[in-house]
Image (tube, rainbow, N blue to C red; front, side, top):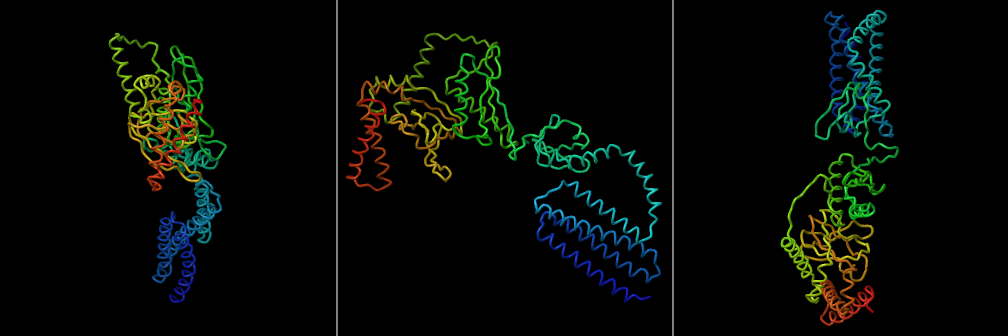
Length: 507
């Protein structure tokens, strides 16, 4: 019995192998955070193998050689499992580093083949009868294969799905009546997280046989899905007017998750009994936000049609019996006219207008509602409208090249904006975006033209108001003296009056 020499040999071998295993483990723990837990489990396997190997040295000294051989087999098996898995972790991490990511099943198959090689090696050094073992295992395999046909079908389907990568983790798919994201494809089943927060477990064999729609997957790298929003419009409205109104409302202010390239467009899709059916087609960039984005697009369509004066759709079978007498109609017209006059009187530019001129201008106003998030005016656009804000709030955004847009002011009803575009034709200085649902009255240059033509001195009166407002702001910003304010006011008044007269061709 030579325990000291056996113990010395055991210590030397354990030290060498332990040093290698420890270095590999340190690399995993230091650089592969997602594999740390796995590495710690492998350390437990390796420590167990050391305990068994210690038994191979001690047990023979107590006249237990057969037991020592069995424990030695287990020690080498545990040690081999630890080294195989740790090597696989490092090897596939290196492949990911060089941007080559094979399917998970390739890793599993490689580890399985390594296990098989490890067992064959251990059987050979322990003089196990492989021929008898193979004959016995063939019979067992036939019995197991016959009883587990469905399980084997799922396994083979899982291998096929992961090798051909027709469906991958992260894909948005439609399967039967379910829609969700693929989270994992393993040996037996695929895990799909539905939009309702549920987890759907689908056997791989069923997934490989069924028709599956992979949303947004194109030949290009960017994944988008084309969406169709259907709506109906009274057939007395021309298709060109419908398309122009809807696209204007949709493109005034970009909608999150709606691509601008390819751009949205409107199609006339069918003629129904009492209406024309249209479809707005757009490309969705975030496939998980389809319902919420569709809702925002529908809201834009609704308000766009309202602003354009395109009537709401009523089914052909709808019958309304409402006796509207002259008295009721007159009361409604009086209320509408009074709200128009109140809106005009809130605009300081029109304080010099006579009651007759205000009455005349009130009839020229058009109703312009906007949804929250819509751009009422857009910086840089040449649109000759003045807006009178009667309900809601909006913010003024200014864009500077090379920098994001910043909010410079907030407008609360009653208020007005866009006067320079209507009076001088200059491009919009800022973008005004509705913070809430907004009600406005819109006055167009053409409607204001007749009043200015009849009394051109209104241009001088309006320019005086605009100049005074601009000079007051400049005085606060620059600290102007009274004399400087007076000189700048005279200059601004003259310049603005000339621009208004030229724009309206009053001279």
